[in-house]
Amino acid sequence: MQVAMIMGSDSDWPRLEAAWELLKEFGINVGVRVLSAHRTPEACAEFVQAAEAAGTQVFIAAAGLAAHLPGVVAAYTRRPVIGVPLAAGPLQGQDALYSVVQMPPGVPVAAVGIDNSRNAALLAAEILALSDSNIDAALVQYRRRQAETVLNKDEQLQAKLGAE
Image 1 (cartoon, rainbow, N blue to C red):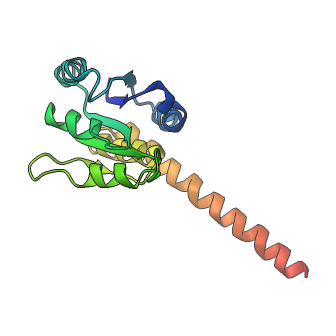
Image 2: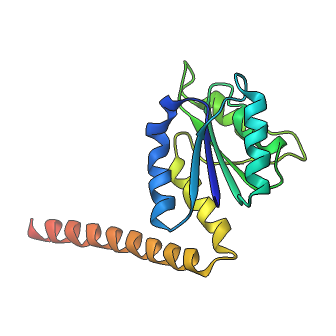
Image 3: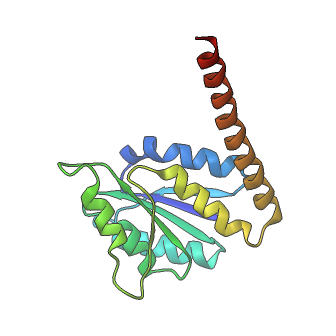
């Protein structure tokens, strides 16, 4: 697999499924696991090390509350780790965001916005596109579609405003 997505609980899947779908749309081989930084630390470490040895290039790790999972993943790999802080608990993800972005020097984790797994998928695709022209071409098309959508919405608004 080119990208490994790890979440601490299966209840996180609804917020990560869009990222999985986007990675698949780009033709990226992606695996998904439920592993906990606190409840299954040995299994998490074993998976990350085995995935890296098997060629995984990017890890996406999603967690809420204390959000230790991205940091634990980063501790066991030299590959890029993208942390997705998840909204949970009384702080609705602010604690998770701070946990992901405040990694100690020497063990970096990239962070996207709270519950923004699609941006994690796009960042993973951009990293892979550095050495894969097919993924790069898919990203170019994705950006074109985004631009077309915005321009179509503007055209519709202008038509509506002109009709008044």
